[in-house]
Image (cartoon, helix red, strand yellow):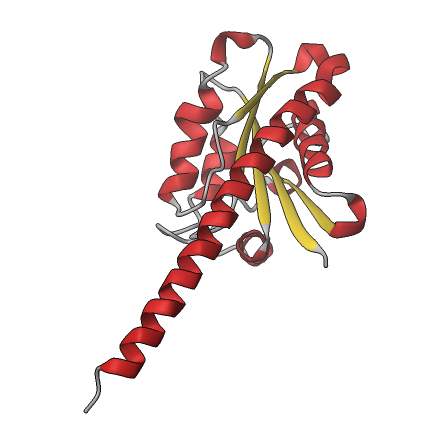
Length: 189
């Protein structure tokens, strides 16, 4: 089975360290033979981000919704994500990402904005209906030699959290099916 993973990078500079961090996380979460990875570098779409409709970006937005997992990454600008990423996310109406597991990622020059991914980007993703499986991932880009270790730690947490939600989903589905079976056999006359 193959899982589709989409990484959306809101750095105005193409092929950035922010992109590298988000891709490393995606690659650590799901093995290469079990994933189809799509990377959307919004820097490659600067002419279309503020245009509505923009068929190319509308197609990308639809691809993100169809993913099994999405990672939204941005460098930290004024303690938050970039306007570029926000403009892309503004293409979606409320609940457009309903049920989509989405991981917020911010990068920065130091740890002063460590909570940015959790207090600015995660709530935006939740507002769009995404399921955010834990606090956002923040990485100091000046420490790229530590990327593997940081990604490993974050991946363990996300996998544990997603597993917990999956087990609950299975239990709730069984309960709903059992309740529907009881209702279906006792009510009609």
